[in-house]
Length: 251
Image 1 (cartoon, rainbow, N blue to C red):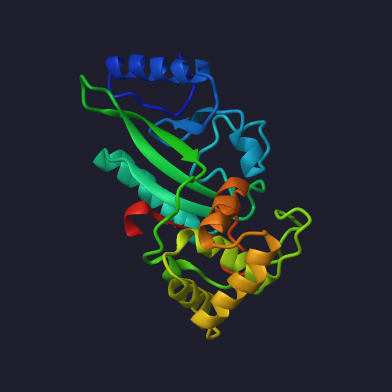
Image 2: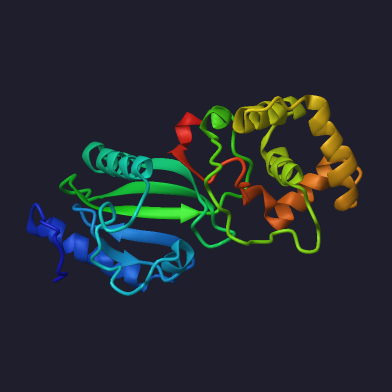
């Protein structure tokens, strides 16, 4: 029997809970996941997640997913509210999360909280937390409202672009170009995030004279292919946002 704060509603739920835990312990761990009991204590976690989150792997089993980790206040409230929503309303919740303290390359993740329900009793016996790196453009609807500037944030020394020397503005536009539908939308997001007026013409100039030349391409489609291949679409520039989190249906 598992030792945890889990308080089963009946023996049938308890037996299924043990079965589910043993299943996740035994599956090939090629994805990011954590299985929580109904008190949100971590019962099973994959081997990759602690490294990606840059937390100590020792002692992570049994930690409470809500109170056991240091989070900014807004992120803490978001996690608490949505885990409760998942448990109490038996609904799956998906959200986009950017956090610069994760291992480079994994700052942007698509998360899901899913209730594990006993089909015979209709009780939620656990919550499955999963994460994946997004591989398609995210919608920019409301994204510009979520981006924020944080001048106090000091970026770690990271280099994603090999030998290329990209300006701050080129890195911003490289990320936004993949996700936005137009140069005007890029200009609007940059203006909102930086508090300065960025024109469509300024964006076009950076793309045509800077990015096309440095990446040795002649059109946007070719540039987007490189962005996707190299994973630049997942590297949110620090100047746009050091952290944000919101549900997928809000996009």
